[in-house]
Image 1 (tube, helix red, strand yellow):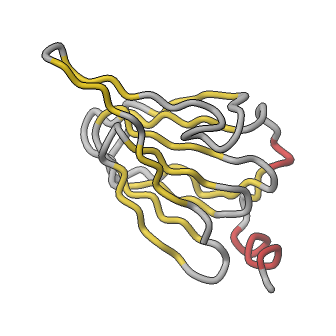
Image 2 (spheres, rainbow, N blue to C red; image 1 turned 135 degrees about the vertical axis):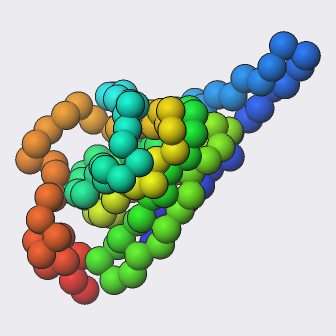
Image 3 (cartoon, rainbow, N blue to C red; image 1 turned 90 degrees about the vertical axis):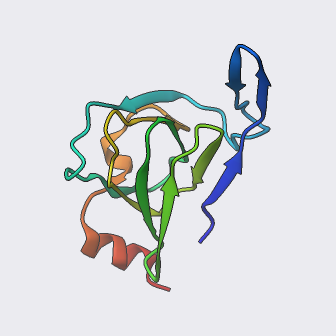
Length: 132
């Protein structure tokens, strides 16, 4: 799998902490869209799809969630629970998000604008597309 956790710089002083991510440094693409998930039910999964071409970068601004990454051959669960790290996800990886903590906020940056044709929402089709 080619997804990876990317640590973000943290600047801390008596006032608190500040983290940041920049395109070309921590974010390996130029973000073109931003969305966020909040007021999430802990038992209601999100994701459930892959992207044909878009890259994603997920950050938990508050709380935690589990992200299951599937490349068509194997799955790996990743716990996102630190606002000073992001999960980079290249195209053609299926994501399932669940186990949201109370008051969780998940920020997602994507490499392109919303395009329904970029989504693979059927697991059977995803398995066929990723068969090697």
